[in-house]
Image (spheres, rainbow, N blue to C red):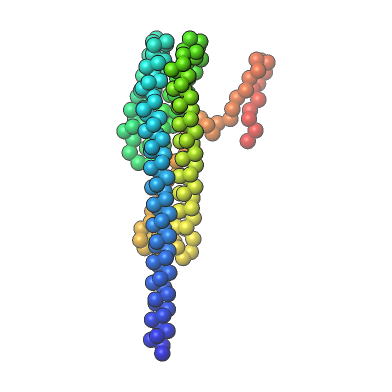
Length: 193
């Protein structure tokens, strides 16, 4: 009789470990799928950038340094390996694109160019999809990390080496206070925290 009870307890423990393991695998796979969605949108973004640079080059050829910065940031982003390196490269590319659009503001003919406007609109839409994909990815990482760290799942995660996954974090510039100056000559008010 005691052997039957011990066998039943062992079977329940094995089933619990299998269920926990399978849950962790599903969560890890969701993270990989979410990263794949980010990757798809990033590739779309990379494909748009050369056309955008060529369009701007036609109007603002002497802005060579800005154009080269965008091209170099794109190259680094395409070659980035791993989530952390990719996030850093993407943040550099975002900064270079902001600079490019700031340069474009100085050229009214460029801002009126239909090709530029179309590319800018496509890039803006892609940026929105990237932001959504990043948010979804980070939510999946949070769910995985929460599952990995609670008892008794943390024991199974440790035994089967389920490692921590990195978040896709925002660039430093987007975390800084926004400065607004209406030309009053005084100190610029800062965005509340």
